[in-house]
Image (tube, rainbow, N blue to C red; front, top):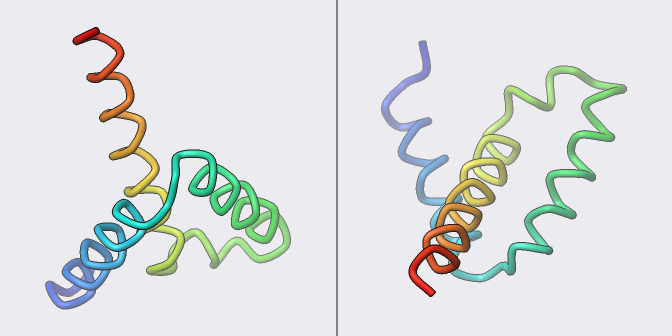
Length: 70
């Protein structure tokens, strides 16, 4: 089980990424991390991977909501 401080740090990093990166940038970062994880499966359990994935899901949800509203 992850600690509360770990989860808070993931959320804080995800928020920063969400605010400062475009959807395309997040997709590229996740692709890069996925490529690394094929050689090092532990990368999927890291804070950066979790945060990038969460920020990407957040951006995709916003884009989907924006599309549906228009």
